[in-house]
Length: 76
Image (cartoon, rainbow, N blue to C red; front, side, top):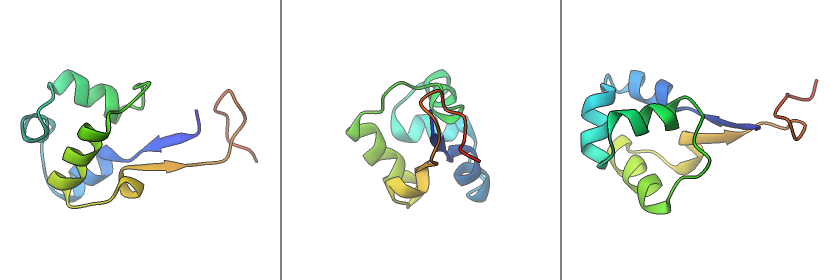
């Protein structure tokens, strides 16, 4: 997939642990790890809203789209 999740960068910039972040947005640390590692198949708008509220960012800061083929390999 050509969607890149930037949660690890945003958490590092804010010096926030995954545990603290998970508690703040109401998810388990395991589910945050699934999001952070780009393995999530979907994200609820309510979760995205909580992420943006806690991190003080926009959805475009959390996720970016990179052109690629359907298998997720970037186009060179």
